[in-house]
Length: 342
Length: 94
Image (cartoon, rainbow over all chains, first blue to last red; front, side, top):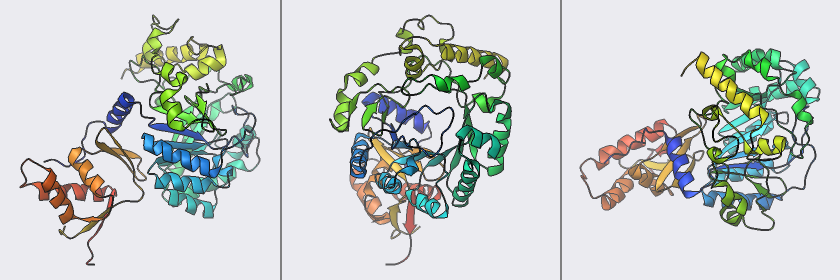
């Protein structure tokens, strides 16, 4: 008899098993679209009606029954909800591995203590510059950098796993190295992402902040930037939306993901499980592959492509067509591998 | 470790059972563990607090192979789980 945990890639096994059984392993839950910052690149433009506390708790019960393990509580700024801690504690009681996307500006000593009780797996904190001048300029919220820094220190003191999340854009591109330095100084991990996306209402304004590919190419050898965003080698299938991942919007709309906001149903009209198992949107998603989409099937860059159908729809109008940013990034990933083979 | 040690799940562990295997997320480290079938059985037995003796007894009832190593294997497993803070052991007398 052997009782030791098995060594073979637990995450790979879990994803495979979940995929075969169509278990929504990853659940993204947008609790609100309200925010206390006004980031220049934000893809959310206006608040929407929100679900009640009891409805959210009931949905978490349903998702736990369906097998969801990784729960991301996001927004807007999710901590703006008065019932945020009640929701987070409920998620803990239902044995979710909880990740929180936040700007952390609402965290003080007392709320940091309450967060500990919810035992989050990770708190992802948005930071857009290494100092107040740049960060507050992007958030358009004076004092936000100092409040975020204070919160990170409070969370670290309490042993919470904190990760910085930074969108790379024209405004902060020249100083991204200092953001990594800031993370090192705080002893937290850091991910940067150059994929600024269009607004969820179709507003193209955020795209004006996107870095030009020629500038990105100059830092192609910096693995700190690209390691976390490059596709898996040989990736030639769509991401796992609709198969092991789904999202819920503040108003109860169920969507493939927070990028691909095609409405599969609404939890005020149908049970979550019925939407997941019976929605034509999810049925459709489970049958498609990148290799079968026009413009991609014969592309030499397919192995390096991290095409997102949600972004494709937002930028090109059609989820299954190539779009400029994905093709450019695939080219960069290919170049990167040639410079520094794995 | 004594047979009478009382064992409970760490309240901070996130977990699910998929395809008869239990997957655990280690608190604070965000590390995922996959338990094999026997480890999964032990975890499921811990839906309420149990002693090591109770776990061993239950596994001996369910297990059909070599029973001689059950105790050592369970103790080894429990030590591993304690080290990873996935379970809590209470060795105090009641």
